[in-house]
Amino acid sequence: MNADSPVDAIEVRVEEVPQLFHTLDPFPFRERDLDREVEDYIVGWARELRSEGPLKIVIHLPEAEAKTKRAAELKGAFAHYFEYRAGVLDRDLKELLRIGWRSLAVGLSILAVCLLCSHLAGNLLMESPIARLVEESFLILGWVANWRPLEIFLYDWWPLARRRRLYRRLADAAVELSSYKAASTP
Image (cartoon, rainbow, N blue to C red; front, side, top):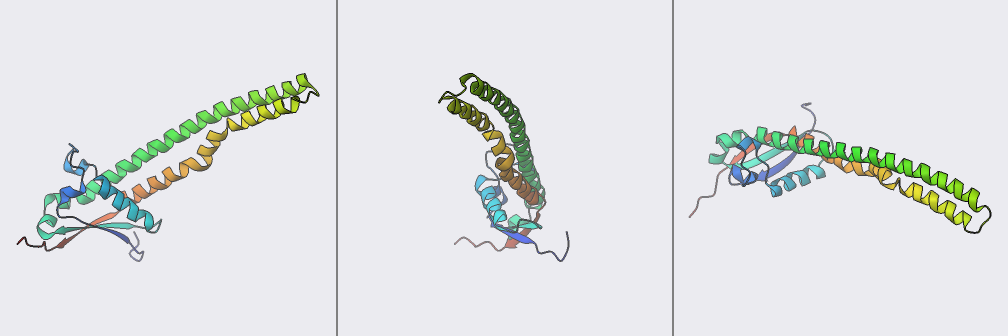
């Protein structure tokens, strides 16, 4: 990371470290899932920041909580979680492209059959008024069968790839702790 490049910061304030993580997750601390609201907040802020460049996540904690072992492990926990989420999106993207290739094979097969049927219908029905309608119907059916694979390859993969890139940026983000004096209870 270049020392001159600006770092975008996402700031989160909590009273204790476990507030950041899903409470029902049975895994050890460093492997836990982030709380859904925390993830949405961090990802939402990251989307609004510059699309490239380093990120920093600043966790504001009371002084006593900031000195705990769990607080010291936050960098690893955040990196692990966001890398895991990027991996999930990577698998989703591969699955989508696999579906796209299968859909394309089916669509092109249907298009070939429809082109053949259109040609045969044109030859069999000759100058019949319905001949042109049947020919065009087969052509339209053939192209409609390719709608989904074209949609996948032209548009559907972009959001997944963009979100995967964002999660990888978040996995690489520096995690800083900032302590504050907790308000005393009367």
